[in-house]
Length: 161
Image (cartoon, rainbow, N blue to C red; front, side):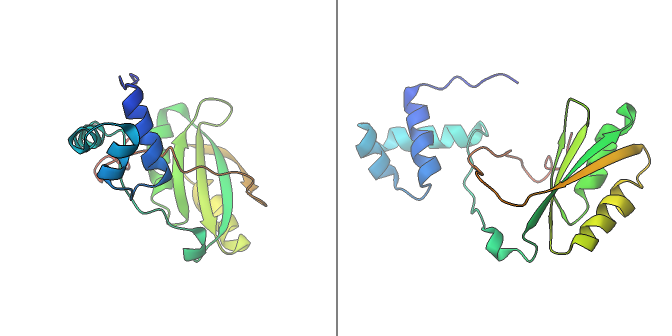
C-alpha cells in the first residue's frame, strides 16, 4: 500500500479532527491561518481518498456484552481468506484480521457469558473446515486503547479480503 502524499497542513488538519471531529471549518481555518475554503477542500479530498471518515464512536457501556476475548486461529493456508470471512459473520465477533506469524487469523469478540464465548470459539470457529488450532485470551483490564486508526471501508468491501 502506497503512503499518501500529505503535507504539513493535512497532518495538522487530521490531528485537529482526530481530537474533535465536530469543530467547525471556520475554527480550524482560523487556528491554522488559512481560509475556510482551503479546509473544506482538504477535508473533501481526504474523504474522497478514503484517508478520513466521520462516524460516531460508541462506548462499550452501550453494548450488552462488555467483555473482550481474542481468538488466535491457525488455519490451512489455502483456506485462510474464506475462514476469515466465515468468522466475520459470527455476531459475537467484532473484528477479524489476517496475520503473519504462528497464527494466520486473529478475531476480537465481545461476550457477556464465558460459556457462550467458549461455545462460539470451540463449537463454531474450531469446528470450521480448515481450522486446526485456536488459542483464546481474555482481556482483564484495558490499559490503553486508541480508536484513532480504523479501517475505512464501504459496505461492499467491509467483508472483502
